[in-house]
Image 1: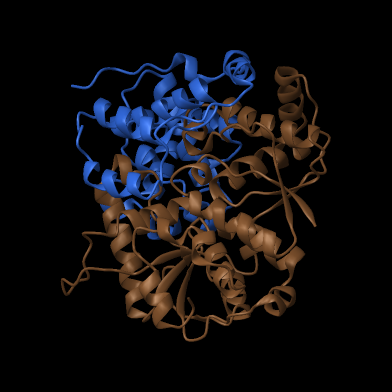
Image 2: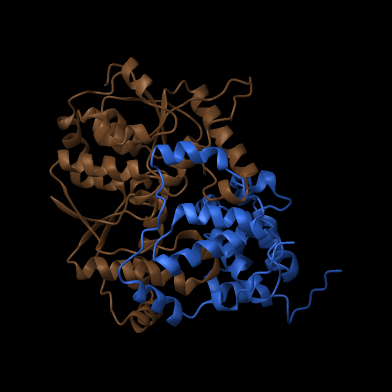
Length: 288
Length: 192
């Protein structure tokens, strides 16, 4: 199977392990990722805050680059990039004014028809849960996992069954043999870039999320968003539970967990890049 | 004193509707947006009150609120609004209006971060995280913020030392040039 791939800025920088593990599992599943050539930043929330036109132009340029490369289906693992690009794609289809203005500026007219996938949608619709289960070599037995969707994932088909209590990530974890826990923060926001501009707010949010995962006795948190991962992982050090105990909960990309279950080496999944070391946990569970 | 008159009371809500497509006059003040808001516990305002300011044409209160800037765009309010108002989008529109009308953003750190972020895209076509953090720290006059994280991040090669530049940078610059944006009118004052 071949699918277009838009990594986005985070996946080639602070969240490289998301890219590394995605490429690794796709290799194991015989899926060829066709990267959008010379892709540019999607603009994400800063452009949405200052200019509606720019917030459409940057995603549009990427849609143009993808289409001109013959890409008909596009996988965008970063929920922020996905939100920007699918927002523009939908606006082009539904709003003639937007479509006309964007084609005026870029000299390219998008006719519609690009299918855009969230990672969870892609796993459910193209890989299928049954297909995933059949490929598992090392079931994640006994691993209690808090499935963290973050705030944006619920807006895609991935979580459309229930925006407040989606279940697809749990279903995928079960297919991998893991044990999803019931917890209260799965669609809460991590604070995103407020970790840089208002660290006080992020600290409160991260504390709430980590406390909820701890209460649910989770061994680790599974994530599908580079911002969620960075905030929870890089900024976990120094945060303590209400009783004063420091948190040390590994925050692992779903793609890394899939890689482990499929029998990949930890080095091929970028596990060493996690700030909260997940190796001791995985070794204790006999998964490495 | 708040003075309401039939002729002008809808001025602000009309402008917001033009820019966002959302009709804030439909807000019934149920408070679901405020109850679920990510940042409200740390703010002096709550999103439902911002909606009320718009309904009552209280422009200055709406445009100069911190809430407008700290909104993390998590879209919980948008997901829950029984009237289908995209409240997070309205917040974005208020940010643009705040700048366009010459008000000083209440949360300068956030405004400056956004600006640096966009400058980064203009310069490289992609975001250069290390450069963004350094520049942002300098602008915010907190040069050592997060410096403790740096050794581990660099050791794990989580962020690159050099920016990734796109090849077709000319195309990116063209988008910035041709795009009609509020951005051009944006003023950033120095830090005081």
